[in-house]
Image: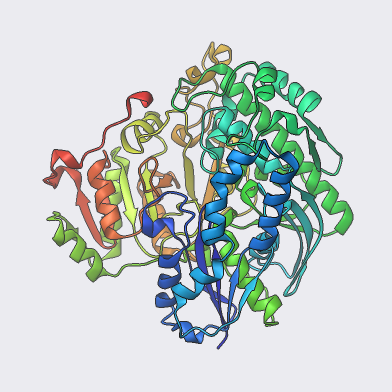
Amino acid sequence: MTAVLGISAHYHDSAAALVVEGEVVAAVEEERFSRVKHDGDFPERAVAWCLREAALDPSALDAVVFYDKPVLKMERLLETYLALAPRGLRSFMRAAPAWLDRKLFVHREIDRALGDRCEAPLYYTRHHEAHAASAFLASPFEEAAIVTLDGVGEWSTSTWGVGRGARVELRQEQRFPHSLGLLYSAFTQYTGFRVNSGEYKVMGLAPYADPAGARRFLDLLREHVVDLRDDGSLWMDQSYFDYCAGLTMTSPRFHALFGAPPRPPEAPLTQRVMDLAGAIQSFTEEVVLRVARHVHRQTGMKRLCLAGGVALNCVANGRLLREGPFDELWIQPAAGDAGGALGAALQGYHAILGRPRSAQPGGVQRGSLLGPCFDRAAVRACLDGVGARYTAYDDEGSLHAAVVELLASGKVVARFDGPMEFGPRALGNRSILADPRDPSMQKTLNLRVKLRESFRPFAPACLEEHAGDYFELDRPSPYMLLVAPVSAAHRRPLPPGAEALQGLARLDIERSDIPAVTHVDGTARIQTVARSPNPRFHALLRAFYERTGCPVLINTSFNLRGEPVVCTPDDAWRCFAATDIDALLIGDHLCLKSEQRLPESSRRTTPAALD
């Protein structure tokens, strides 16, 4: 038996992944245990869980692989600080202690986590090699082109290459400080959201842009800040940025060019902010398309694999699928740094240890249902421990019938069942579900349940066999990484005067007969659900379809704003108790909020800034 442990750590979304005999047997982010969103600390609990899940002693490991090369990353930081000295002194003094204590000597933390029994050699793979491996080696393809796009690894900010069999070969890179990921993050911070966390908010805000306003900002960006070449590579004028030496992403010159200082977090969302979001989103889509066309010209391949944080931009992915040159597209579900742990493990197994690979239908990702799972006894112990009132079901059909009646009557149901998802998207097992036909549900979920900004869109989970009827999508999208228009058959004509509305005034317009999952531009971020690998979630969707004639449910992650997705039954109960979720489906047990005796102190209310 050959077992390889992959680890990512020390920046954001630390994680561990375990590959045994070529199969991904476990993968989980550290944040799910620590309850610190985007936790970047060494994933000691994630490592321990992966080994425990596989019933594997550290002594049985054949290799441990870290997802980047700390010495090269330190080299980049030192060269950058020295080149800009003395301007970067404050930033350097802030970063140096962490480097000297942990980041440069990650082997010490690995030794401490695995103990004396582990004699497996430790290897380091380059950051973008880990991304590329997570994309191609987990995919169902025997050969494919590969593109990775993120903020920065050691020096690389994007790469492209090819994968064949068990081998990944990177052929070209874009180097720091020129980076599409850092550019998007600069606009994220400038528009008032948190870097490495709020980029998807910018993507969701972009459709609210006024086309003329977005075009004005896009022209400024193209004329003064970034030179975009035909192959998708960038040159960025660093006088507009401060991420090389300072503590912020953008400089005063950037603020002067775009007409104002950065938006304070939680400040009102103005049309100007929406136009900025529209500009950077449009630019990003153009870059992604140019990169893909260039790689297609260079490789002649028909399939493309994507990873890196930018690959989570599902709007760009949707355009790449519709307008790009590749016939097939596969995107790593944990495309960010968490997925680097999986890529490191796969690269270790296939490239470092030389084990063969045989591509499998759907890949080795197993629906990305790779995290902790809790049996009936653990669920019952939690519920009894908090004094919950519940109904336990022995028959799946009866349980689903009860849940469907709640959903069809406008109730919000949280579902906690089976293995937890690996990656940022809840795919049904740690999800909040609701009826997409209810035009008020989008606002209800944002403000009263998720406790977050009202503009945020929700994703539909749709029976795979009916997805083509509801969306302009001709293939599965199991990982919620593609945006596509709602089909004409289900769209509704806009009411008189709707086209003149701007900004958030457009939010309440019903654009389809599934309005709660239809964004203001008529699109949706789709998850298609097949019987395999999640038959229980598919059966629930099927029961809803048979009851209502609608094969779609709202699917949003089971968590509160600012918190990671729930991991344990205790996490699920706390989130249920703290929100206006009407029912908790936890394993084979159903809890109704109306039947619980919850102390008022357990409730969280909507932040005033979001009301």
